[in-house]
Image (tube, rainbow, N blue to C red; front, side, top):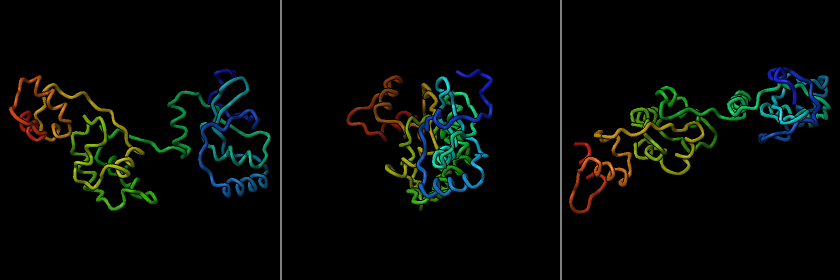
Amino acid sequence: MSMLTDVGNLMYLYLNEIEPGEGIEISEFLVESAAKLLIQSGKRNWVPVIVKEIGKDRYEVIGNSFIYAVAEAAGLERVWCIIADSSELTIEITRILAGEAIPRISLSTATRDEILAALKYLIDQPGSPLKGIKLAVAANRIEEAPRQYWKTFDPITKLGCGITKGKKLDALKQVFYLTPEPLPEIIKEPSILATLTVTELKKMAKKRSLTMSGKVTKADLVKLLSQ
């Protein structure tokens, strides 16, 4: 294994010592065209490949996969690389900075501006299932909802903001994740209670020794618990 001081260094590595890693979908035209230009310009990749060490004189690409693919297509024997540490956080941020992954933010704590920007990004994507939704309306209703307690994205479909189950809801997972807080022991806010399941509401009612006779609906439980 190389010394710890290699982390952060620019090194001229043999291409056959480097594994491609996860890689990305790359146009063959772009790779081959760039490879020709690389050969014509002296075969030096001025933008380095980012790699992590996986063994003695063995490395794996974690960022700038396009450059690796171009270098391989150009028949380069060696390629300039920066050695990164192999932590998951380093790999994630490297892929994001290289434009190979989309950064995600916690919807549980995001500000309105962050929600607005993320939704706009999704809407602007070619063929986005979110095209047609009212951006400001969706951002406002999500921001105002008790999202700090959400365990899934399903409550969004009940906000009346045009985001329904299926492709629209799934699209949100490209830019958001959830970090839910524990529910308080006693909840009386109807907007929060409405996001819970009937089973959860019944458990809360039982803990508070609240009972109802006959067939009980979710609306009945929400009304009972909000008193």
